[in-house]
Length: 264
Image 1 (cartoon, helix red, strand yellow):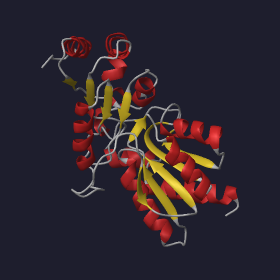
Image 2 (cartoon, one colour):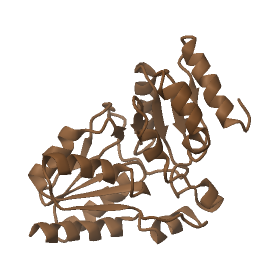
Image 3 (tube, one colour):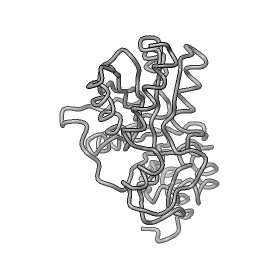
């Protein structure tokens, strides 16, 4: 327990790693890269320390804590640091397995969790595979690629669209870095349209990373369901997700749009 001293916490974790231990350091997502970016960059990323940052309260689903506590830039900040592995689990089962995978792997990790209780999207038979996307639903008309809290929303959207005769594939891209380029190229080739969904700013997050892969290897119509260039107000988590367009409804609209653009 380092108290309200997150920068010191990062320094202590780096020192423990330098002595051969495998430290896990945890705080709110807004305070990890937000307050400690210099310490993370200098003491963990540059020397490649074996530190595992497991952060809570990611995104705007923190809710009533308000703008100051909404972490919507963290994935782009940590993702910019060479050598970091970035994971955004979809539920409690995947979280537990991701933590074990981080402990068993050498190098700096950033695992981003959220505040609300998430519905389970996996059963106990699920096995987390670091660096690999997981197909949640099959489909041929478009693909939804989601992370974290948005995976359940993506599955819900696919179920709703199925009733309209729109057949969507859903990928859980829980390992954001290194991103599974092969999986992205495969769905771009096979479905010809992609929608990304994330509880993060549009710039620098999942959508940006997927767009980079698509642009380099197989350009297709894309839409990004994410927080646009704004900070969120205070409110209940469900209200904020709805207000800022992070629901199944917005994913469904985006899917219809990309299918129309590809001529389907």
